[in-house]
Length: 198
Image (cartoon, rainbow, N blue to C red; front, top):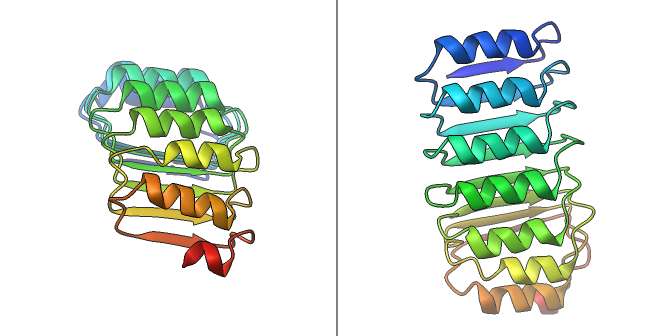
């Protein structure tokens, strides 16, 4: 396990050295690391094939290329959490999810500029996803939410926070398509009405 939290002096060079020496690394947690970029994440992907969990938060230089590499080179990835990374978009999220779909069971996407396309990829490739959290996705519409509902693996938990795109009608449509869902948590979803919940 490696956690780098609020370490502004650690950059790609340091992460590349860690990647070269720690081939058995299973969990990586990066938070508020302004000098880490795709280069460091690609080095982790290339040298740490046993990675099972990755969390990236408030790392402004990490984007799509790094996530693509993780998806392609880390076949054991089970958990991914990405929050407040402005360079992460549909291309990175969709590549990661489509490549790592066989064992990826936990997905958290928060404060990203992804669109309906990423949710459709979750719906199509997310057969193993059992735990999904979406929060503050301003560019996602109700259509993406409905398409995502076709993900067969969404059985245990779905957590939606500050998702203004979800209405009562969308919630009903999602519930019909995701019939095996055991638990749905809604927080600050202001368009959901009582009729949508009932």
